[in-house]
Length: 166
Picture 1 (spheres, helix red, strand yellow):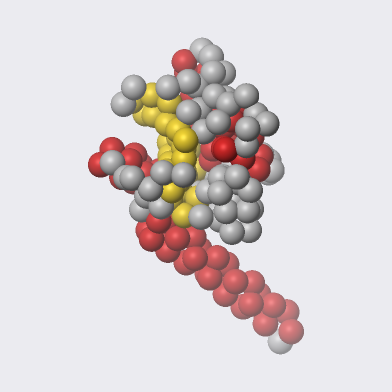
Picture 2 (cartoon, helix red, strand yellow):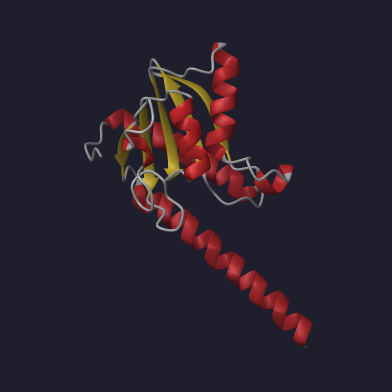
């Protein structure tokens, strides 16, 4: 696990945060991802599970699919994936299978995080590919977006429940 942050990491994470804000504007959980290859953004996206009614429409998977199409290969060797929240098991599995060598994420996810919090798939030697991970890049900004979103969601649910009981 790497904690050294380079200036480029913050720049690309800010792009991922923009994608998270766009997802939030659509009523999605505000998670964004950006895949970079040779200093160029190859793909970027936010969550689309609600909009597409697709349980696999996580920002990371959308970005991996788009990047593979764009470069004409499912092997995303030499790339770096920036994500505003630690990937889940599904997404981390896809990152490993896509041969992404470097993952940078903002906030840890103690409930489903698979890059060091709950599981540590990037360092599992049972896989034929390991992923170098940098965590905590713009963590505070990402955590705030997520906590505000879920706080507002809880308030909306509470208000709706109160209307039902009136």
